[in-house]
Amino acid sequence: MQSIDQLIEGSLKGEKLSTSRLISLVERGNKHAPYVLEKIFPHSGEAYYIGVTGPPGAGKSTAVDRLIARLCKNNFSVGVIAVDPSSPFTGGALLGDRVRMHVKHDKMDVFIRSMGSDRVMGGLSRTTKEASRILDASGKQVIIVETVGVGQSELDIAEATDTVIVILTPESGDSIQIMKAGLMEIADIFVVNKADRPGAKDISLSIQGMLDRSLRKRDWTPPIFLTTASLNKGIDELYEGIWSHSRYLQQDSMLEKRRRTQFKLELRNRIESEFSHILWQDIIEEKNIDNLVQEIWARKIDPQNAARRIMGELIEELPGWLQRGG
Amino acid sequence: MDRKIKVVIAKLGLDIHWRGVYLVAQYLKEAGMDVVYLGNKFPAEIVEAAIEEDADVVGLSSLCGNHLALGPMVVDMLKEKGLNNVKVFLGGVIPLDHAKRLEGIYGIHRVYLPETPMQTIVDEISESVRDAA
Ligand SMILES: Nc1nc2c(ncn2[C@@H]2O[C@H](COP(=O)(O)OP(=O)(O)OP(=O)(O)O)[C@@H](O)[C@H]2O)c(=O)[nH]1
Ligand SMILES: [Mg+2]
Image 1 (cartoon, rainbow over the protein chains, first blue to last red):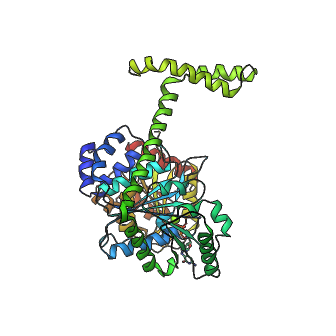
Image 2: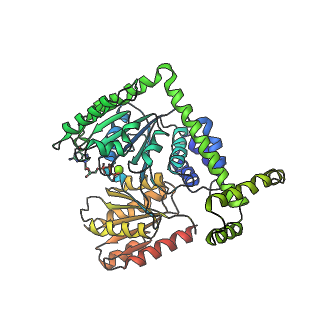
Image 3: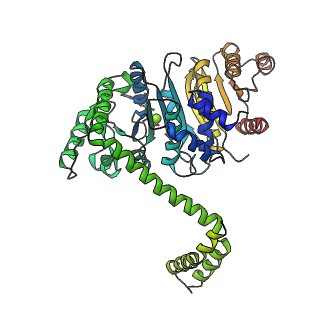
């Protein structure tokens, strides 16, 4: 077994096995994870981050596969984090994104990692961020993160990437559904994939209509690309579209602003999760909670004031607790 | 062991039978494992995936008679790449004497014939990972 320092050194030199092991350590919340992240962080920040999201089966992985090939043709090295949902019941996951991905490793510098959405000690965005930072530090120039756009995960992806591509299909339903899913707000680029099927033009027009009607002031109007990823059609245009968004972000330090905002958000999230961890692990005792539940059950106190009572006691005890060093 | 087991599963080469292996993948997921399904892949790609995914176990399915050629190739390439702890399991329609040879000199950890109960596969995978830890 290699030491952590050897793994870090290896990964920074671009060794795959070391990189892979490091990702496992942070994924599993291993006790060495903070040390790993501390060491690799100064080496990250060079890569360009692309998010790909959209409904299940829209062709995200197929499009990612084509983008990988396109990027490699221009001599970029590529890291991919592909997230699929985990079963809420068993925690297991069937990660199928690699089925669509075909990499010629002797010719292409690519690292793909699959991840179950609950593989995570601190939320999806945190683990994907940590894993992509490891890939970034290992020398990958472009990082692609694929997530399924249902529920909250598509919002996370906007917090972790520079350019967000939302992939829809002629079957994606009407514009109201797309709006509801929160995809309008986060898209820097729209793709209507499966353009070989009827209705592609219609959905692209309805997206265009939504963008036109939207009251939000934008300096960047998301372009809409029609692709048939399975036939490698429209990928060149999409590729150019990504870089033109990237060039847009280079003006007026917008990329820097975007990333600073992301750091700020990340910092807030981490403070909150550290705090709640301490709260539940070290400070609040289960039996106090149980006692309060008893009182609530007896209708002697309502839940809101019960929570406030606990908070009140906490704030009194906190200084002493901190002085004792936890 | 409290951490999730990670399995990389592939159909060897051009094998087009998929029901069996997909059902196994589903079952392993239900047993709480993270299962990376590759579809049809050749040994070099399977091993590359095992590296990138930090797999504990590689599962192969072979129903078209290429098991004697490609199965051992996966085992050898894993060793070559330094993945000495990764156990290889192989399932498929395989003559009994081939199965014995694969488990013997060819270093496949376990060969499963079509009638193997799913739970046996789950148990033996879990056990092999526990032993390697
Ligand atoms: N007709 C058509 N089919 C496509 C196209 N692109 C992808 N597909 C097919 O759509 C199916 C789903 O493709 P994936 O790339 O796995 O889609 P995905 O969005 O990654 O799926 P999940 O990750 O499971 O949400 C596959 O059968 C693809 O072959 C396309 O442009 N046209
Ligand atoms: Mg996919």
